[in-house]
Image (cartoon, rainbow, N blue to C red; front, side, top):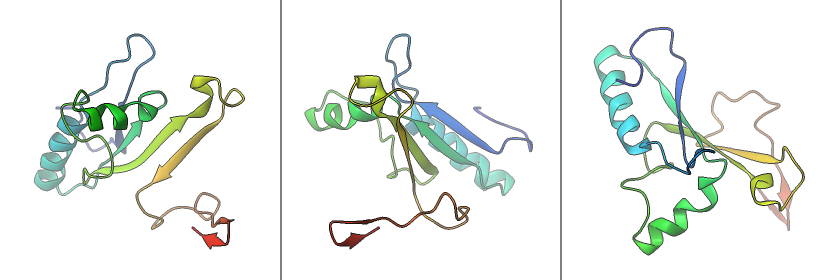
Length: 121
């Protein structure tokens, strides 16, 4: 099992590691977490570190040559996903983004509202 004690706050999988570009099986981690949460009554979530793979995996999936399963908010236990723009040289070092499934229980300095092109998010 990916985690199995009360001290675990969350779990993370990497979508495209630095060494060889492999994806952790987020779909399998989610199934394990789902079973663990149901059995123990816990609420452990998953963070997907998609620093590099987050820019590639969606297109691989559309082409039919991608991951063996879902890796994003289609999985019930994925609570956040991060990506790093600087990995592809399109922004300054350290630039990254994190997207949360929902605003509920986020600190006010994390859950911000942005008005852009007349809309609000």
